[in-house]
Length: 134
Image 1 (cartoon, rainbow, N blue to C red):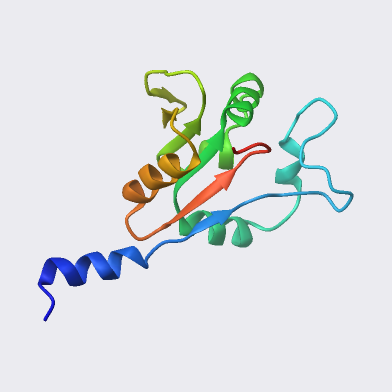
Image 2 (cartoon, rainbow, N blue to C red; image 1 turned 90 degrees about the horizontal axis):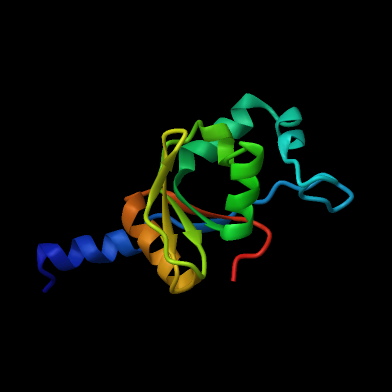
């Protein structure tokens, strides 16, 4: 017989997925010539964007993508999605809030970043974003 806590843990372990969310042009490019990403918002419908956004509870991204986003002021989902963001990096940093987004820097690898993100999402998905998550 299971205790209530055991049942909750079993149910929670199956809720929320880790998804790779990549937008790419038909010729295989993710970023433009000068690392710009604004082209992504020219295509698709608001309905499609809203469906994706509504399923995501946290984002895991690589440091390169974070730096480019900071430089270009083009953060994931145009900062519309105020959810925890976990940046995989080799340099320890204090958490930062930029444009209403909370960034936590994780130095112990992808698995740890995903684990922290899943703990923060509740029932929603964790989106992996970036060109070099390792």
